Image (tube, rainbow, N blue to C red; front, side, top):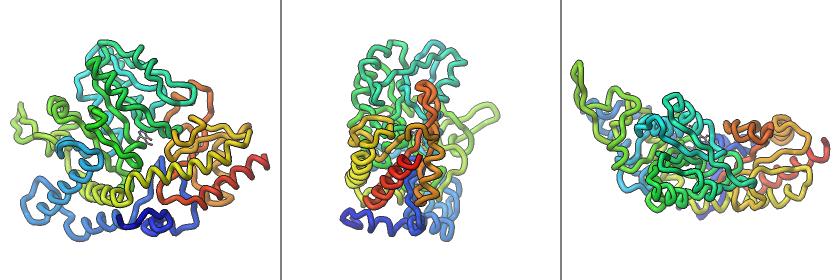
Length: 401
Ligand SMILES: Cc1ncc(COP(=O)(O)O)c(C=O)c1O
């Protein structure tokens, strides 16, 4: 531990937080600590070469650092093997890779929940043109997952179940282990969209028995344009390649090629080495803070905000009333007000930065005829003082309008 957890101490590592802002948009993107920024700079200043192609000493250093990062990522999700960690640009790319590589055929079914980010809706919807069927599993009215509905929906034709792990709409975490059990008993695979889960939960892919887990570096202190797809080795080995080119083959002729082994098989072209190395450093940072402390801090702030604001009859939250089920997300509307206006007022009054709109989950909002929401999303470097300011400002808006 670099610090026995103290949000105020942690804040000093984040240059953006020296500005006069309250950053409550962490579900969109986390801020970056100096340690990550410095590791990226170090790459560019000292050894900005490529890995896997040249044999000189700068290239060897890059290769070595990339391998160390892969090991950090392996540890953060408790994967068994480094080859199970595929570097991608983001969650979206990981999901597209799976959707296009597991050999879905006409008549195959995929089940997704009714609250998926566009990144876990569109890759499947697009495949319908090949005769694949997408089934939507309806959740409970409080936003939690309905396992009974899921059990009714799954069939022998269900090839894969692709569900959000923790929702970016309301912060609800789905029962991935239970979903995996039902799916596996049925002979189906499971992909979890871990974009919101990995940054603040202890995720153990082995314990969950999940087949694939896609997540983004930029939401977990890492650089933009970095992500990971975890997959069970035996599945990844069997899967076809999605993007193919340099690094993904060992030999080519004019009419044939030999596929590389894992993980390079799926990492086409020159990679974002600086980003990957920075992401490894982000994992080291998260480990030092402790994912347990991160989750605790998020829940503490969300409980404080929920306790105060849910008393106000003008406020409608998305998701369960119990803050303990909503991670670091407080997604809400003020009766009669446009969420964009609320978000703008919060910024103009006290520099509170939230996100408003449908959060890339248009399908869920449209089906419920909700125009959007204001989403305040907290991370471990946010403080109770910030949460109290936020509560005060929201209450002022409720009174004034
Ligand atoms: C639940 C969820 N899934 C997928 C994504 C897409 O992530 P990315 O844009 O990094 O691919 C996001 C981003 O907000 C998300 O919150």
